Image (cartoon, protein in one colour):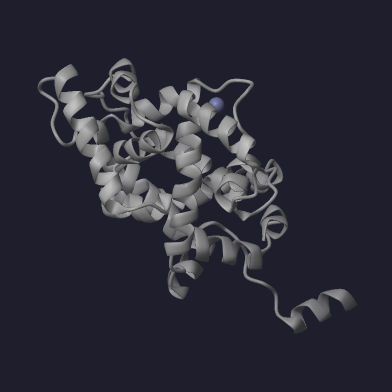
Length: 258
Ligand SMILES: [Zn+2]
């Protein structure tokens, strides 16, 4: 699909739009609610960005599997949306978030980070493959801690801070940060006990990897749950993206003879 898209071939773009438009829409709705009134226009905007400069985005990609491609796609959606939606003032600062997380284990931090990203306990359980009750217990603990730091905090304080905290987390990127391949091995259980320990220790202490690792799992879940875009919508989007319709067999034959 990716090679076809880089060549602006309709079949590749057909599959890209069919399978990924629903995910772009879900991410925009979830993280950028201010774009909601023109959601379809912004979804198209994401694909237009991938289409720009003769599909340069596709030729710049480096990935080993679909899960890694999903992360590049996520970055494309966020890059587009951040330019189109103003950054809200966060109720919870980075320092306060770090105070709340101080006594949490790595798994509890992953749970809290996903709550901060606006997911409920019922949604977090299948993303992290743990129990809903566990997720809720972490949230309750974090809420109690936040209340001692920020007395006027409410149930939405974490979620309303998501965009700012996620951008802060990205800035924490360092040389020792984990590659996507390691996240994949961790999820698939293809990792030694010792390696797992070191990896989890890094995720526990590195905001960037906490954000990326939870995003990786979030994208896998989103991909599993995404339904294909309905046929008429795919065709309409391809037309608006200027991806030409394939020429018929006879048209090709004629041009060969010419
Ligand atoms: Zn890191």
